[in-house]
Figure: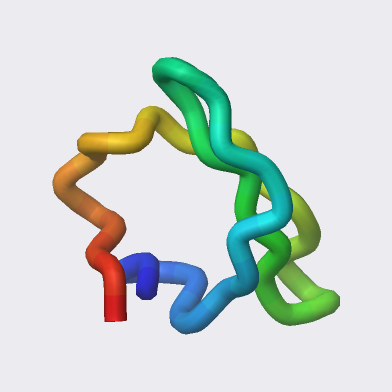
Length: 41
């Protein structure tokens, strides 16, 4: 769950980053794993 983009689906997990697919209007983002704006639900 991202504070701005809402729920997403994790599509890739790397050492430092995760790639998440959000709703169509936001698309796919690569985000640092421990970023404060995301949380596991």
